[in-house]
Amino acid sequence: MMAAWLPPGAIVPSTYFKDQFKLEARQLRGQTSNGMLASSKELNLSEDHEGLLVVDPSTNPGDSFLKVYQLDDYLIDIENKMFTHRPDCFGQLGVAREVAGILGHRFKSPEWYLNAPSIETSNEFKISVQNEIPSKVPRFSVVVIDNIEIKPSPMAVQSYLSRLGVRPINNIVDLTNIVMLETGQPLHAYDYDKLKSLANGGEVVISTRLPRPSEAIMLLNGKEVKPTQSLLV
Image (cartoon, rainbow, N blue to C red; front, top):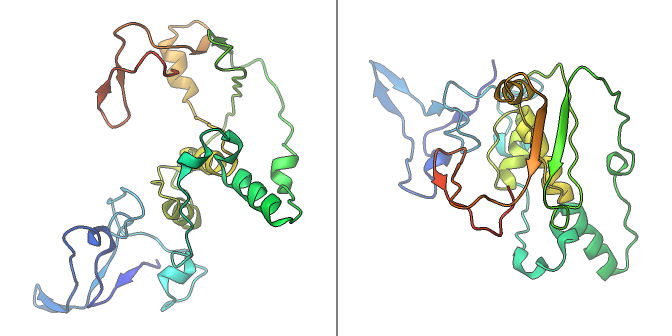
């Protein structure tokens, strides 16, 4: 396998902004250890610390990890508060369209954005949407996709999300985050089987509404919060 090597003198990326850990050649179990091979977490790309990060085999030994995965990219950080009245500028495409207009350049949307793929419908999966607040949520769409394999995203995708300040999770979550960041359209992937089990044999229903009085919500990080009445759930 191909792995990422941190040589002596390198700072472990996950420690860069806190207590920096600088590697050096040292004796380990009677052998000289020259740096280390790194996990995705040690490279500060994700929370995965189960084993070494596997590098794309199309690269060559000795290639710069930064250059292979474009981690030496230039990043433009735009303060979003200036766009609070412009939701079309919440995504990268919207900002690019705005900049093109300011500079007098022609803007062309990418093909995948203009031509959505056709979807074959099936009656196998029963699901419906219940919208209690159409004035606040004018549209809420759901589609069921089966035969999905949950696995880590390719390293190029993980690198791309990391540069945008988003932690990679898996191929499904990462894809929804990429589309959201590029278009400004919020997306979420649900596990149909889990929703089906919660429905106790009935039809799966996803509802959008305002919080109930004194309602608490358990977040993915395990914290429990009480949303304000103005939030959407």
